[in-house]
Length: 388
Image (cartoon, one colour):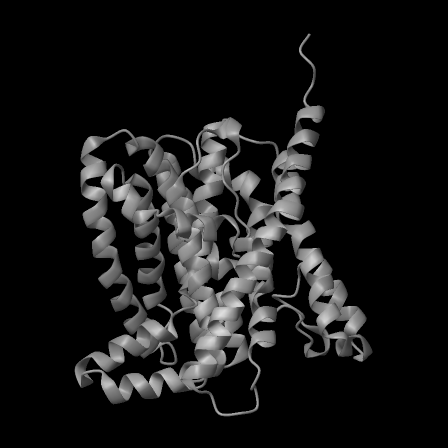
């Protein structure tokens, strides 16, 4: 959810439809990733049988990297929060954390209740109480008592929450004008890359994909800080060039160039992830993702309509609810979980789960997320001192 993002508040300036569209891309990628948990072997066999041999590795590397949606969400989070901070002239830690809590927690807690209601057997597990406590405190990305995972995708909320805790003190350092902020941001990004590579070297068992390797490279905030900071730096660049005709003219071509660059980053990361030095290619993936976000938000005119079509922007607006419920929907939609996967079952499962996720995501947006954000905004206004 990565994922729990919001449009900038009205006081922070107009929202960007490109951000909603990019959130739509991100959640659809995450949906495809979890759909592939069951059906990827079927799709892989079809690709290997029908695609030209030289293209097969490249097609498969894109399919295997659908989890890139989480990387995109993290960069978007840094961009959205950085842009909001710049436009508002800064926020107190209390106001910021109140808004973040209102954005994430109510909808997430409701989703926990709904998911448990559909999987009541988990209530009898010996470690259920401890696991529920970890989930309620948004620690499930780092700890899973008894191996109980209520909503698997929400591990990323733990990483997000860690970033929220440091952002009020980080924003004044990297979101201000001037070269000093750029150097500080670059230092944090490079430092995160070095930490990720060091952890990779420490925990790597060549050729083996372990849970600890996954945690150090994907979940721990020191290894993901680069994507949030790159997003914030992209927000600075956007503010500096938003009115530039030259930037708007170049943006569509830069965006188009980011697509093959991403595929190359996927390929390098996939080839070397389980080898010594395999933590390095992720830096390219983060950089290209940030460049893609910046290029998209700088698009104007005809390019804007292509980058941010309304249906995709709608998916982005309700993306947090889709994120919270799509795995439940996928499980309910797969009527033949014990049978070998077929194209008929794939099509039926994907269609039902996607439509159900969008409907429930919209309901979550209307009934839980938007009211919670309005409540937080009201609290913020009430806490401001009255003018003399």
